[in-house]
Length: 360
Picture (cartoon, helix red, strand yellow):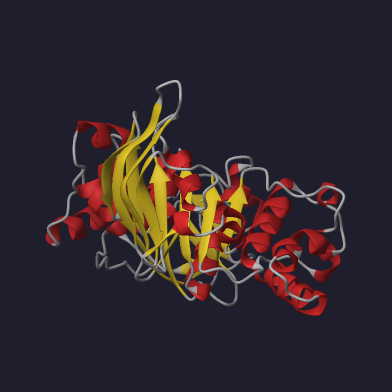
């Protein structure tokens, strides 16, 4: 499923131009993110895909078919749509909410119910939660219901308008991971709007940066956007720390150093320094500081959080973050959850330079 904008403009009666001569292609089977400052036309562009907003000039095609040739209601029922705050019917159960579109497109009750339950399970909700009402769920769970509703009719295209902006950061990360997993698993084409460049870079296979006046500033992969911003506006919007974020798209062979671990209850002498503690399966538990003070058995209450973990094969950014966030200054490297060694920041930077990367 490919979406194509051909010289699309949206101009309102008062003379305001929300989108100006927009031409771009949304590739089939990936996540394309529209991002930009408030008032740049990104939401208007999204809503023109399902004709919630009609363009003034130009046309939008889905698989070479002009959306203007389709009845708006039928078009919208064929496209999944997720909005901020989920937009659920408060007087209907979760199951009834998710059955809405399958019912509207004419599926019989049994088929609609089966499809709705499958969608509910796909987004990580339970059968018990399906019988509840939206007010009985957390904000993150309600947003999962919104995603399930968008998926229930098995659409090839799903539009998402700032779907995670109303939830707290931890829930937001979980939902982002869930959407990425579902997109890969189902092969759907997702178009997502956000004002958050970090979210755009994290989620998008392609990122369309829009500037004020509804102009497209750049369409590129996240790595290209960070490495080669098209102009000063894009460079400024992406942020001054883009060199560090670029490391998230840099595959670097970082050799870890061997790291001896100890178990809880094991004696560790004073003066040994920072010691990594792991469980019987080799999974890291935390660090113990024995640079000074008495030695003796390692107690759980002594453990310091270890910072982030780097998995073998992770990006340079993950390795560097693990090293910088560890209290010991040594990032823990794991494989299948088990400690294989540690790495210091200097080792990561050396690996980046050796491969011609930038540590800026």
